[in-house]
Image (cartoon, rainbow, N blue to C red; front, side, top):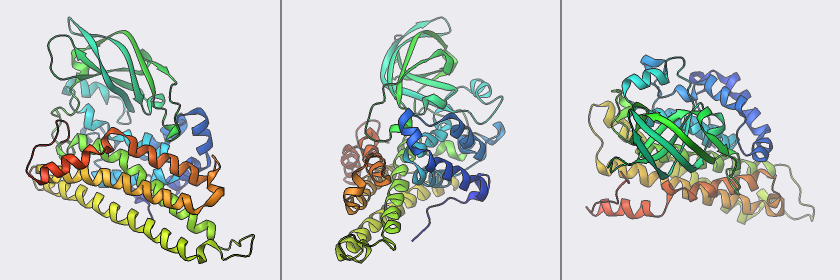
Length: 382
């Protein structure tokens, strides 16, 4: 079997990353109980370079490629899906780069390891005043907000703007309400954000997916597509863990009834092979689409709509196929997997939560199919 592990030499070395992954795996129950990833783990993500992966090198960034980052998130997710989900927001420069350059200098002036999180929907009305906006409202699904130093919220300015904006502010200006009571990805801390009469300067707002003010190859990669990819790739790590749990648990384990060991049963052999095929094939499509677009960018060209659409299609496909592979692994566990603290129970819940995200909705297939037939997709797809 392939080993789902990143090249650890570029992320702080084998020993440091292995210790981090072991620590994450050992503390999964802690993360679920408190419903967020502990801040010392977020600090370790900073230490290995997760949050500076795409920060421009002039500000101390490390110049990672999309595939390098995605494989890192995949590996972390095999230790814990929620940890991978929170680490995935190391892609935040893809959003923040739409801020004015002078603002970016402020964002990264002291460190490239800035953690940004936010709640986008529903956009709340913001009152235009001299120099900026007065922001009020509540926003859901602010994954990773407990470890963030900067938070963004979606606003619709009352100045006639047609597009919503993200208003960025220090975390201490925002109240976090722990409303995240769900059955999967429990540790992501996707709580509500509440803002009351906070002034946000105009230069600290941006249009999500807007034109970057930074000119490096990464900022030519389709940002909304990448925002979907960093979430769906968690399902790859989860599915790998689920398959490994089944295979490893069957080794040298005798049935209490004297029946054949699980690994000796034909139906189990067939099902685990099907699960493996789903993971490998969807993974291959996922990274193939990623690298094709990156190669085009590195050649100085612009990705086509068809190429970007394939990223979106591969993204939804990997989430769906890996959720099904995880379900197969869970079903093979029998009653053991039914316990809430069993690894396969957590894998099942986390993998299926990924498929519920709007980025991985059924409409992706419709949009991808529309482009294949030469029709325009729904707004926001590309």
